Image 1 (tube, rainbow, N blue to C red):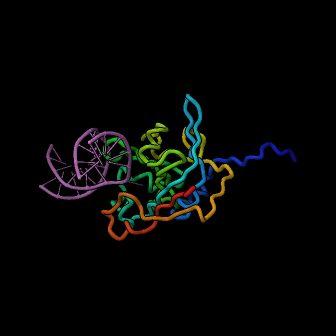
Image 2: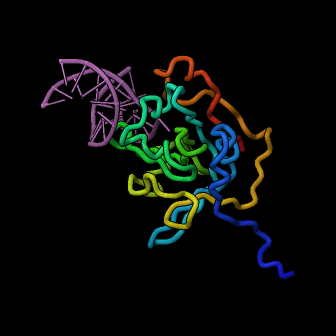
Image 3: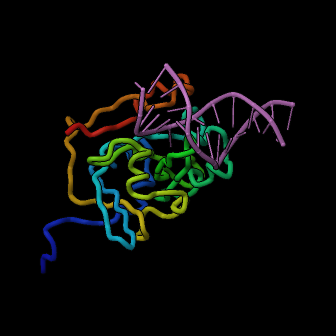
Length: 179
DNA sequence: ACGATGATGAAC
DNA sequence: TTCATCATCGTA
């Protein structure tokens, strides 16, 4: 057998995303967001995420039902859900769970880039990726690169900026990597 | 603490 | 058609 690389590197498969949202959110820490343009390729380790889980979660856009905006969340796992907020920032989410069940994970931060609006600006991510697959090497995808984050380095907190969601705002569905 | 800035969903 | 709201961030 020929060893071609000592670095495990693979695009995350749909099966990774087709699991409970909280599990996917947790497991996304340490994975790499990869952005490829004509200028080149950029990789950054995911360090902060939030889970948005189902129609009952008042913080989840899908609690409003199936609309033009929320449609991607009702679609198959492993696809992007990108929307604009406050007129100037784009939020990058990846759809999780089985088709028909609306859920997604918001990617809030990568190494060296803290903040969901800042990371989409830095990587030039906008609505053209909305509803496109995150599981193929087509511009924007997520890779496993052999990084294992110890549980001790993972912190859980309530989600940011969803005070309007009442009891749902108290759930500790934000996961972050503490270096 | 506050304003920028525009898409969205719900009310009318 | 109008209106309040918003998974944010930089400046003060």
